[in-house]
Image 1 (cartoon, helix red, strand yellow):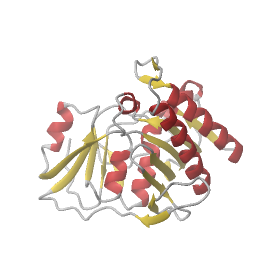
Image 2: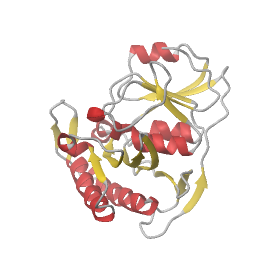
Image 3: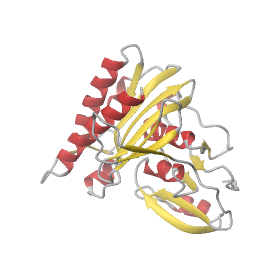
Length: 260
C-alpha cells in the first residue's frame, strides 16, 4: 500500500505541476462555490484509476466524486487529489496530493505530497511516518528520514494555522496560548509541520471534510501526534455520515490544551 500511494501521489503531483506551470488554466466553481481546476480533475482521474486497479475490493472515496459516496464503510481509501486549490489558483505553492487508508475510523496509512514545495511525507509499512528527500523518482525511493513531533515548551509554543481560512475565532483560541512563533500554511501541510516538529499546535475552527484531513492525520499520528475534536477533546474519527468533520485540534503530546 505504501508503494502504491507514493507512486500515485508522485504521478498526480507531476500532472498537477504541468498545469500549474502553464500560462493559464481553467477554474470552475463547484456547487458550494469552492474552486475546482483541471488539475483537481486530472489528478483525481489518475489516482482513482490507480487505486481501483491496485485495490479493486476496497471502497474508494474522493473529493471530486463526493456526490457518489452515499454509504460509508469500515475500511476505505480516501483521496483529496489537490488540497489547497485556492493556493494553487493563486500560485502560492501550498497545495498537496493526499491519499489515505482508513481502518475502523482511524487513518492508518497516508501520503502527503507538496509538489511545488518539494516535500513528500508518508507512513511506512510499519505505520511510522517519514519524509523523503531527493528527486522523487516514481521508480526509486530517495533518502528517507523518520519524523517525530516536538517536545513542546508551553511557554513558547509554535503554532500553525490556515492561510486561506483564518478567522477571529481561530485567533481568539490561539490567544489562549503563549506563542513564540506563528506560521501560516495552506492545505494538509499544516499537519505535516506538526509531524516534523516545525509546529506544536494546529487548531482548525472551520468546515473541513474527511478527504481534507485523513492523509495529514495519518502522517501526524505516525509521527507521535494527535488529532482531537475541538469541542470535547475526544478522539477524531473517520467514516462519518456525509464525511464532514467537526472542528479539531492537531497537536504534539505535551501541549497544555485549552478549552474552546
